[in-house]
Image: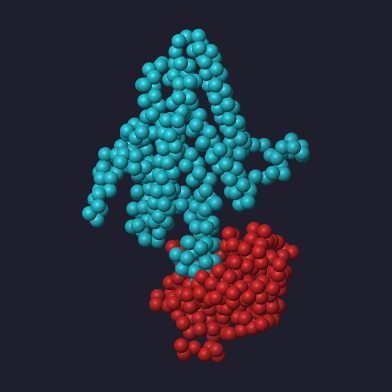
Length: 290
Length: 248
């Protein structure tokens, strides 16, 4: 509970009277990291467009299409692929969160076997490489399954969604366990003395208080997951990375390689950066409110 | 039920409790009649809060018996809901539910545990807020209230269940001195209305004023007990004298 003493911070007051701090405060570290990353990104993106502009002039002199025109040409296809990445991230997050909440509640169950096994499952998936889990899901889940006599197909991308939702499940499970255990025991006592059952205490008193504690790390996890979705290209799903490689193959232009990857990268950045910014803001807000 | 109001409403007989190696209660016996106000005083770590928590079954006991309205609290077949309807408890740290407003805190248990109709509960809850002098604070969240105000909401929340007995566990222990009084006034009014109260407290002046009977505990036993006049004027045991000497 680092409730920051805002009155003693900076402006106003004598600097010599302020407490000496060995380590910089967390929030200033974050602010600095934000500052650096934003500027780095601006330089990269600006550099990209500047390079392309120069190239366009050069290309008009030579007798080949400019990099810029090639990127414009491939943009619809690539952007479609990027949207597919986002779809995969949404679904993995949704499935992983639902399963993770259940697993997390098992982790705080009073039944010891249930609690232990939930802990084992959580630790296993939390400490397994995402790519290995992806391969396992691709290889182990059948390509179709008959349920009640009807055949349900499982395309690779669905299997990949399951693969990515496994680590999400494990992380969410840990978030839930940590949040539930961070609620003061007095809340349980008060609820118990008011004759609330354990189930009602959990759903009406404990879990609602957990939401705000879990929200920032959960959003952070989502940003990380989104940035990890290109992994599914390795297992043969037609997402943005696969399509980029296809575009490069079709054009056979060595000078397209760096700009086009940077282009795709900037989409991820534009999508994920606001999420991480907002997470930082939420965290700061909750720290102050307590 | 063969209990009659003439018998003690709470009857504690030879209760033992230990946490691991640490023996906290070593044969405690207390009788509380209906409408009586009992104050339990004693040094920290003498098992006062543990005893209070045994009365409404928050903590199990190792040996002995605790009867509330003639029913054994630690009978495994006991309906805990029925017990906790009868016994209300207020804590040192208030323990209000921070995500609900003051009024919602008061209304939650009657609606969701007792299943009473919302309109009826709300009318009663507003009446209780008025009773603890917090009219106008119904929609405030616990974080927006002072310690004394939060503690009075906690008292109202407990009263909303219409208990027969109220347990107060050092309810002024975490309060600023200037807000202690407002909480004590509320408790005093309750006591005057005839509510059976068991208080663990460090407020000696208050205990002397309000209690029908004072119990002094030290290291898990009741060292001495009696009506406040004789207890404070004429303590017999040297441990009591030492304790009172330090406090008064």
